[in-house]
Amino acid sequence: MMNKYIFILLAITAISCKKTKNPTERYVKLNPIKEIVIDSLKHPWSMAFLTEEEVLVSEKDGDLLKVNLSSKKKTVIRGFPKDLTDSIRVLSRGDNSGIFEILPHPEFESNRKVYISYAAKKQGIGSATKVVRATLQNDSLTHISTILEAGPYTREYYHYGGGMTFGKDGKLYITAGERLYKEIDEPEIPIAQDVKDKRGKIYRLNDDGSIPEDNPDFGPDAVLGIYGMGIRAAQGITVEPKTGNIWFSEHGTRQGDEINKLEAGANYGWPNITTGGYRSRDYVPPTIKGAVYTNPKWYWLHTVAPTGLMFYTGEEFAEWKNDLIVPGLSRGSLWRFSIENDTIKSAEELFIDDRVRSRKVVQSPKGKLYMLTDEDNGKILRIKNNNK
Image (cartoon, rainbow, N blue to C red; front, side, top):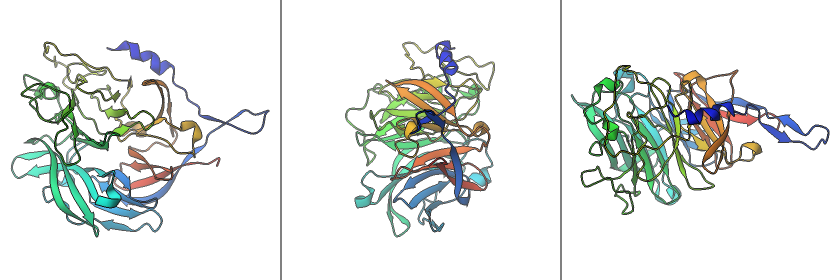
């Protein structure tokens, strides 16, 4: 369905160029390369810069770390909440349990606040997506408080979501996955379509976890804080600096991976509409009276499993400025999208000769571009312009 988007795939641009001073040679091909900065990480999920050289790194199968990119020193942050699910012991598939996003407060330098999403456990019940706020002092987490607990706790150990970003409005946006693996297990009202269920939603909160007064109204029985719904497994969420718009990535099942623009009150359709197929091939979603669904801005016709995306604003790749960079787990994808007036105009797949499972892309304060690899020997890679 949604064949009107297929034409976008036909418009893919496969080459990046830059002007040169030689009038007889107007353009030369950019030469992005990958350079290993840090290795021996346990499936790193997220990275946040504290300074140009010092970062916080979350390991899905390990710890929350402070890493110095120059000295290579790694320091385990103490005081992590005791209810963290052991992702290795669970032995689940896909985007399974562990630590997800680490996000400093916009005023971190003065208040030392950080936000962490992770898979929390309750003994004998299962796990749920949880977000906490803490103060980071002397390499320890203190004054920990719960911002969001997207229960119920279940024994489905996948599709947690856990993506976070602060909007230009100062509000905290959080993705929470629907947690199911097969559609046949959906209740009568699908989880992501049920406003009384915390799963399968995108939340907008004040920085202390309270609910903004100008949030959209999903009805008197709706979970507080919902900003968007119809979400299956959204991991990446980011702000477009030029416009303040918020974009997020979405995992499909059999194909159906998407890039969406977040709108207040929007319903992104899962599982009632999808650009792909279902794992439970005989599944037929129920008709929901009055539902209005929002189409993605882009979808792939093959599986990409898009993750922690970002808008590039650096100078090293000047032709990429304001473009959306999207990593993926499947086939080791890394994509660059050009956007005009909320429309994706062109797409380029990078490093097709050197693929690696990619969890997140991050830009340093000085505009350097980095990527996390999702491996047992996980790495922080610097993406450099070899023509510079």
